Length: 118
View (tube, rainbow, N blue to C red):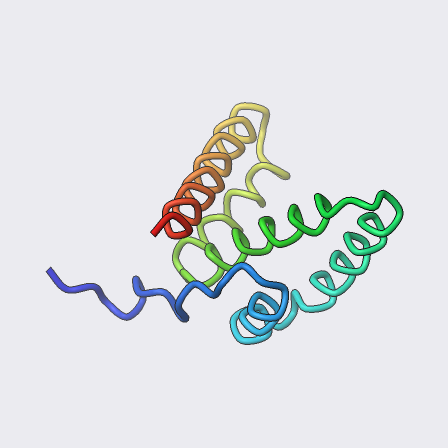
């Protein structure tokens, strides 16, 4: 069974480093670069204030998941649709959408965890 071009990731998953993630975001979701930079600055400030790298680790993990999803056009579109439904649907629709969003995010975290163990 072959995979269609629409089902293949746009780019390989980059390493979980700030530089590699920035380059990936620039390539697949350039409109998100201002948010990336703003959140990186916030994480760096928090890390400096608390003398703790946890904010930077959270930043890298969050953006690695973002890239994992955004590099897959169908999955990214599904996530956008679910986010819209969660925001505008009735209570039942919002709950179902939130549940599926959670599954998508859990799957992305799991995929990244698996790839780091190899």
